[in-house]
Length: 178
Image (cartoon, rainbow, N blue to C red; front, side, top):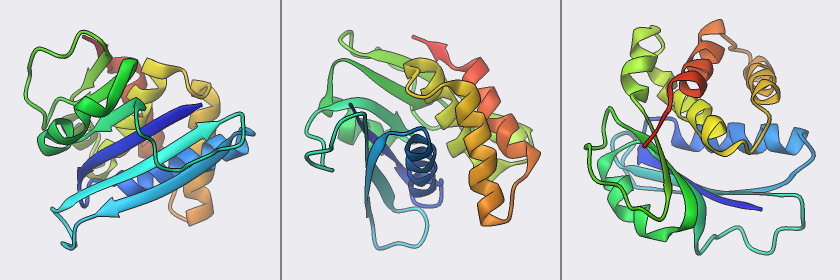
């Protein structure tokens, strides 16, 4: 079982990233849950979603200790870092989270997600870069299955672009363990 929080500013695709994750995990035969939390602002407020991915039945969709934390901005890092269990994973968007001494009890991976997505002329896809980094760090879902599932997710929505998979692949190949 993996208890996960994805967090950042509204408009960064946090809730969408969580939906993509549960869609692909469910198609991979996993049990999943997804809950969201966001500020009243349309864009720029805080947004997070809790995701649970498990081979077993899920008891609660609200994790108390996190196996994986994906943070897109500084306030989200500050809010949730203390909730990561020993040995857990923290995936950090180094574009918007300050360089620091990370806790020794967690495995940290960083990626300049915002800049990477912008360099591919897909600035709204920093969330996909972060999902790639998460797959590299955790191995939660086979990376090729995840890439295929990503394409299928966007095809279902009617707006798939090869740049989406490029953003995911950048995250997967360029995330750095700290």
